[in-house]
Figure 1 (cartoon, rainbow, N blue to C red):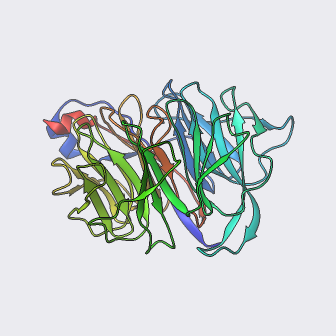
Figure 2: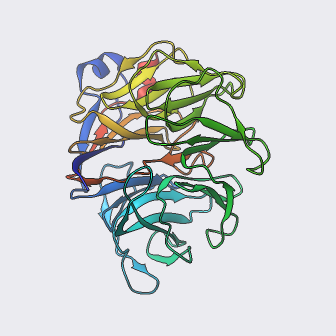
Length: 369
């Protein structure tokens, strides 16, 4: 697998003056996590952050300023077989981890590894296997709905578990890179045939039936979805971002041509997009965008999220983790506090190295004035 540098974004910081916001960098270094193979982050209802780095698990209880390395056991005494690829937390505080085994397989969309799901009910101290056999088709995303049902998008379809991951039902056989449940309960999924090809499908009956909703959509694979307070849904894709104001009946291309790996919206309905050239913000529903890269030493942003306290996070390739500004919560790619949203990643996995953590100096609401 290729070697690349990783950077993750977590936000903290308190300042009130708008002029002072302009005078200092957006991002700032934090303490506690360094090493290789950091792929995943999640936030629980108490505002505690979890990060999986290789087979190590870290937790922060102070908004990402400092981190501790957790001691844990798997199935009574072992550690995870290799790297933690995804973390997700339901509304009861149960933590789920998708872990790979280092056993590689060729796949139509690229190299994959054997993957399995583990669960913890005690804040990550002990874990048990939740799947009876390895998943060999690769995982694109994981999400948890308000009823604590788990959905996993894989290279061989979208799967649902209603019993904490012990059993799984196939909802569709199409390869799924990303998935999302709207506030009205509709499931949106991004199919993939490689990053440059793919489309959007939707189910209005819990995944029993699916409909192609690609009118106006001309880009490739969908990396991520989010929704604003008006019910507009946004899709970040291989070639820019799209918006639908009528539940997917028609998509409009926004004025972005970069690959959009992640997209979230705050309580002001301001949009934040993670691209290969940094973080972008739109204050007018995606019509125009400005960059939020001051102090961001790595620009290829893979994951953005907003926690329940309103902190913006991002994962980026290079050499650090950056926490960003304090934002009012509307939706998040992390799970919870918005369990209908998906922490998305690639079906084709890449090895990451050299991680540091940064946070923002200021609160974002100061920038909204």
